[in-house]
Amino acid sequence: MKRILSKKDYYEILDVPKNADEGEIKKAYRKLALKLHPDKNPHPKATDAFKKVSASFVCLSDKEKRNVYDQVGH
Image 1 (cartoon, rainbow, N blue to C red):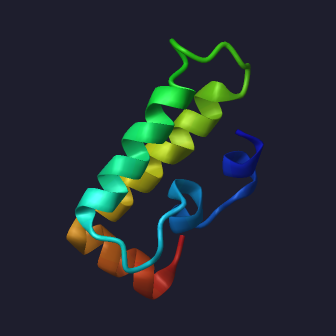
Image 2 (cartoon, rainbow, N blue to C red; image 1 turned 90 degrees about the vertical axis):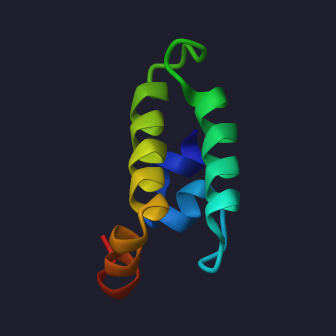
């Protein structure tokens, strides 16, 4: 959780390479979502970490948003 909260780059948050395909991104998201979902993880920062993971997935799973993110960044 500490690793996720300290990162700003969406690829680093999901721990996938920049050339990852949709399947890899989805797999990484599901793995982290199960660990960090506030209903399953009682840690006080779990909600913030889950929100970061979700925002990363939303951006990287949409081709247009991902292209813009790759060109501009956050």
